[in-house]
Picture 1 (cartoon, rainbow, N blue to C red):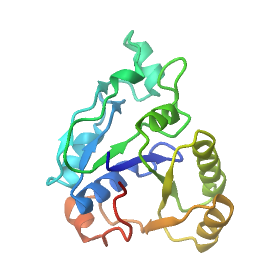
Picture 2 (cartoon, helix red, strand yellow):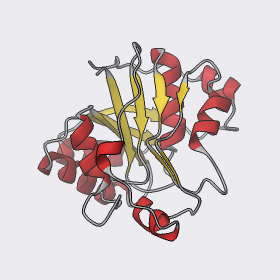
Picture 3 (cartoon, rainbow, N blue to C red):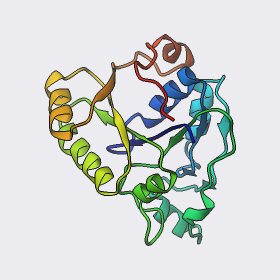
Picture 4 (spheres, rainbow, N blue to C red):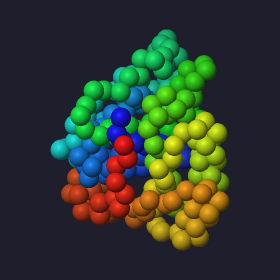
Length: 203
């Protein structure tokens, strides 16, 4: 399967923006296996708004509460089975967006990193550019390596911080693939104006 799995060092980190950016530029499809917080928002709908040319595959699991998949599923008396999270059939590359970060629980046994290991797509880690990002990003990279999940690199969101970038690349042994500067608005036209990724879709 050709494509990437987009994860983040935290929630609200910009994973959906980066997913839309990659899918639009690569001519890829988009799939979010688990959507939580559906009562308030939908990442699939956001990608459709930002990149209307992208084919959106519906989530396998939709949960209403803005909580971890495990807690949101418990509220609805459901259990998420990893084996049910099967990628959609497509001839195009696939951009898969996770829910939260690598250690977010999916059920009483599995974490988001277990889904990444199962899919075996290279991971793009989305991180903030500012204070605190070194610790969060290095811990995320360390956990991915422990689980033998391939890492493509890091995308940093926010005002450029050369020191933080250098620390992540040096101590994390991972390239920073792109730095997305603060946007005046998050719209389809603004997304289209961003430079395309300088790295190609793996697979």
